[in-house]
Image (tube, rainbow, N blue to C red):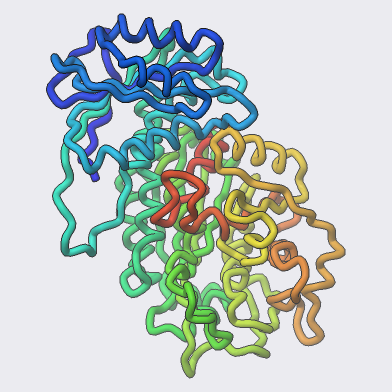
Length: 499
């Protein structure tokens, strides 16, 4: 892809050779007049066929060349503000454009952000509206090709952004650039193969990047994990040649009020074979991303630190590889966690909740005001919600409302599921405090209810099952090939609103 340079454009526009300008027009009664005005502004003449096609119901874009340059080409994009319009429109459209341009020779991309007023019911603020354009260019430029022998050196592309009657563009550009560093970190970690990204390697890579941004990091070794009596984390990692790790990170954006701190927890199974209860071979490769929750949490910490949010936040990431061997945990085993509570292992492929049991107890002991965990926890959640949204599990209606609203705003959507205590019946064990799988029905809910046992009841808590949207899917231009980094933008915006 491109070597990107993101620039908040000045009032005076200079078009260098090999440039493309992108202009947006709203699909309304005055569309024909808008097209005529753009021809005057850019001193360009569209053919009758181009105009007729663009004005038609099916027309979406008009691309025309200028023989004298300045710019060399102009791309008109029609925007229809109807019930199908979403806050993801510009992000998704520009992501697709960047991918299309990667095979061409454009060197300078000029993007004219339209006035905010017609879109204000779909975007939280003017700054966020502008931010989505920058995000689109960056997310569309993402690729994971480090292991390809035929990869080519990236071409240079300067992307300039301009506003129509808006302020704060530089702030929006800087926020987006910092935010997308976190998204790309999450994607890079999730896309790494399991033989490379072992628990130790995940912890090492994440720590190096976070420390550079002013985040304090502590990595607990297997020996230290044993001292903390984290039987769940140890059991899941017992079958692997790569021992488990626990990563704890701390960002103090408001040291004067450190007693008010938030916590995010991410499931970090660096590869999930299923263990003794081994998974089918088909699509098992996707299980290299069974640490997507951990990756999202690390990415969110980076985005928060890079943008210097005035908030205090800690993160807890349990890391293990779930493999079958003579040392693996087995169905029927009883595990004693750091909380003192016991778990009967009914299925070794329900391992994520076991490592989270120790992580959530560890997080609770840090006394945050709120805990949010992210995990690719259940296929049942994907069956329920598809790949469009994450499952949201919490008893706190205010938290559920805020996360839902934030998810809708940034187009990383979540959907609240029931958390009635009746579901505890599914996890009952005759030989331990709780069983690690709840049976066929309500699998995503019984998994969330399992986790609830290990969170301090005095702490507000939400669990996000991201098994669907974290993996590649075809619904957006920027989610088709690679693990998506889902959750970083959601968490960042949620805590930005808290700050």
